[in-house]
Length: 254
Image (tube, rainbow, N blue to C red):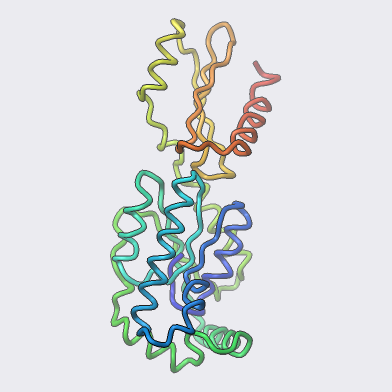
């Protein structure tokens, strides 16, 4: 996620994580836990919060899980850190904006009234001072990282935003993560000694890049499956869901 306080990042992040059933890591949860550390500066605590967020996120990715990161992502160095620990895993950015400043202001002040003391801006003036300190640094070039910018104060509401976000995610060419020609694939194909027939690339979209399989249907209608979990620790639930999908696709037709 990317965006200023009060633009609806957390609401959309929660909806995405619920839809994809993947971990949600919120930088503010960590930052709020540091409020009692009055001896440290706000900048130092902010950096500490980001560092903790990146470490936890890296662990989830190492375990083969997709993850939703909720933070302002206000500086390019934050994105660079994500790209570093994400490695070969795909990174997407959903940037939330609020074109209706009156609604934006209501959100900021309503949250302050409901949640009480915290590190987030409590008034519109607080937010304006924060944006002034940014001095335009949030408008950086994200390079080749796919990005979707959504207006959370638009007529479609949060449901419309979530629909756009899910379409954005599903439109990504996740099968590009297949590395045909790896040792596993070569061994499988060479050992078969049969024409390949037709090939289907199947992606278990529910876990987004967690499970990928290539199904090879030979002339004798036998089916061979090459399974790549994109991790050393495959998720058995994702694998089972993928196999059910393949059986449904091939069971009657083949």
